[in-house]
Length: 332
Image 1 (tube, helix red, strand yellow):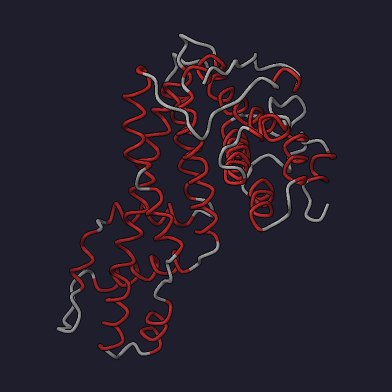
Image 2 (spheres, one colour):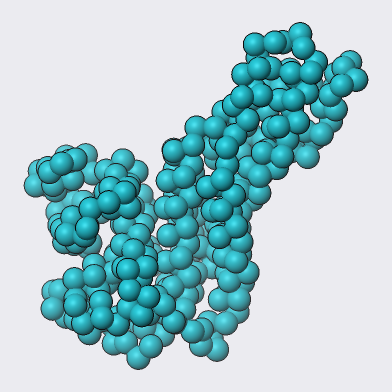
C-alpha cells in the first residue's frame, strides 16, 4: 500500500504518485469486519455472472404453450421450463439486495468524518478495491441483462400464468403450486427490478442515495467525493506509464480500471444533483473520454462508452458543455 493520496481539488500532475492497489490490497485490522462481510457476498458474484452468461430462456416452450392453449402437454412443458429459470432470477434479485447492503457498509467506512476522503482511500484500500469490484460486477451484470430479453420475457410469462391460474388449476398434469416459492410482494419487487434497463446500477444508485439521506452525520459531499476521487485516480493511473508497469496482471487490470472508472462516473452522475458532465464537475470527463478512446477499440470499450451515453442521467442536460456532448457521440 503506502500510497500517498493528494488532495482532491488538484491538477493531474499531483496524482502522479497516486496508486490504488486493485490487485493485491490486503485488509488492515480496522477493515477486517466490513471486508469479511463483503467478501462473503462477493464470493457469489462469479457464479451469478456465469449463470447469467448461460441464461438461454424458455422462449421456445413459451411460444408453443401460447400457440396451443388447449394442450396440457405444451402448458406443462412451458411451466417445467420456466420454474428453474425463475429460481435463477430470484437468486439474481436476492443477490442485488445483498449488494445493496454491502455498498452502504463500504460507504459508511469510506465516508466517516474521522478522516478525509483521501485518507480513507489511503488507509482502506482493501475496502476501496471491494467497492471497485462491486462496480465492475454491476457493469457486467447490466450489460448481460440488457442483451438478453429472455430474462424479462420469462418472468412476465411466469407472472401471467400465476395470475391466470391463481395458483390453483383443475389440470392434473401441471402442479402450479410450484410457483408459490415467490410471494406476490416479492414478485412485484422482482418485476420492478427486471423492468429496469440497468437493474444493478439502479440498485446501487438507490442504495447510495438512501445512504446519504439516512446518514445525516455524514457530509452530503463526502459520498460524491469518494466517487469522483476514485474516478480521477483510475484515469490518471491509466494515463501514467509508471503505474501501468506496476499492473502485475497487465491487460486484465487495465480493463478492471476502465470499468471502475466508468462505473464510478455513472454512479456519481446518478447521485450528484448536478451530475458528472457539467462545467465545474469534480470528475475530469474530458480526460476520461480521451483515455477510453485511446484504448484499443473493441467490444468492451464500445460497451463502456455506450454505458456513459445511455445509462447516465445528465449527459444531455443543458449544463453539459457542447464539446463533451459532441465527443460522446458515436463515431466522433
